[in-house]
Length: 99
Image 1 (cartoon, rainbow, N blue to C red):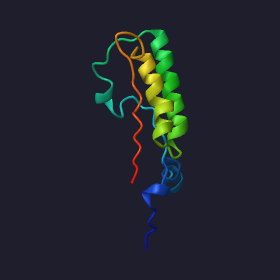
Image 2: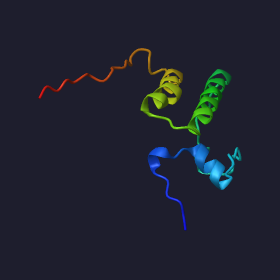
Image 3: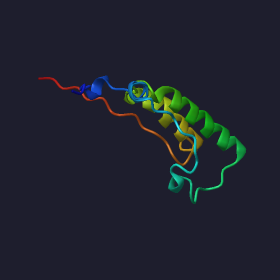
Image 4: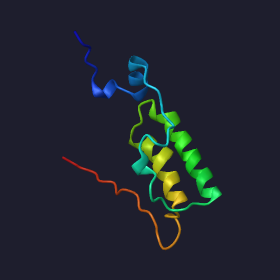
């Protein structure tokens, strides 16, 4: 017999605990993700390391859309200089439905 867990109640923490999984920092695990990367400076590396640490801290638990935006997307856009000219961001437009 097996236990069925609905996806809405499933977190990475649950899976790690139930199946005794461990996070791997082995750079050879997905080698193709590391090939042909652009050179970055120490400040950029520090920012990306902080972003990674924040992501890994939060990914074990349920991350809804707004959490992903705060933890990953906003800092990544900042590090990529996508908040400064010639770029700008726009928020989603509100829509009100009256029935």
